[in-house]
Length: 185
Image 1 (tube, rainbow, N blue to C red):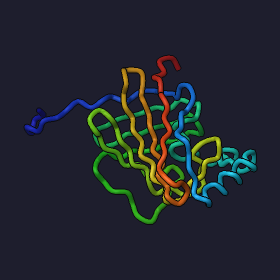
Image 2: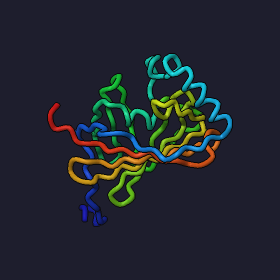
Image 3: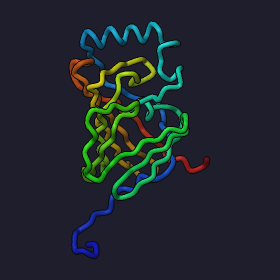
């Protein structure tokens, strides 16, 4: 209990430097006709159409799958992620505030909560100009990504992103990856 008498639980400590390990796993994807057309266009023009080739922000969840380390800073009300890729950052609000209305972002707007030992982050308010992955999977501005960060052990985070975008896909689908703590940088 804290000084006010409220019972508190120790939350997992995600702070540290992390990097994706191995390949990103993805469920089979089922496209709406407009989504299939955008995917085919992206694939045909990958070298010039990929937003990363134009130095644009990768968006969420793509930023999480890039082979560059990132650092997590954690407080009771916010979690910050800073990325070695292009010196990007994102802020996850875990203070119960709601996202703003009428604004879209390259990296989306991230609002988190704890579900037991798992950090669950709802990412909304995306623009439609990023790709979900290097394969060119598109999305609309209606994209809702639900991220789950679970500390498997002191040096491993299991990451899962559920992609929900009814304008682009016929059903939600998931991608998963593992982050390993980097101890020598």
